[in-house]
Length: 165
Image (cartoon, rainbow, N blue to C red; front, top):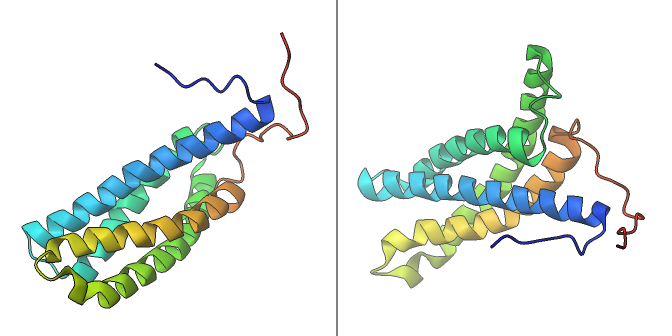
C-alpha cells in the first residue's frame, strides 16, 4: 500500500514529499550514526565522546550523498568539480553547525543523565544521540533546503490550487 498525497495542492504535495524524503534520509543517517556509535562504544570500548565524533562524520557523508541525489535532486544540476566542491563546502558548513548543536546536546544529556542509567550504561549514548539529533534536524532542514542545496528544483508557489476532476 502506498500513501497518496493527491488530495493536496501540487505546491503543498511537493513540499510534503521533499520533507518526507528529508526525514527518510535523516532516518538512514541516524541509523548509521547510532549503529556506528554503538559498534564503537560496545564492540570496541571506545570512549562515547570520541566515538560520536566518528559516527557523526560517517553519517554526515552518507546523508550528503543521499540528499544531493534523492531529496534535493541536484546531482544532475551541479556536475562540474567546482560546483560540487562549492556545494560540498556549503553542506559541510550546515552539517558542522547541526553537528555542533547535536553534539552539545548529546554531551549535555550524557552528563546530566549519567546517574539515572546505572546498570543500563550501554543505552545512554544512543538515547543521548536521539535527543541531540532531534534538535539538530531543524538546523539541518533549514540550512540544507535554503543554503547547501540552493540549486534544487524550485517548488511550485503555495498559492496554487489542486485541480478538481
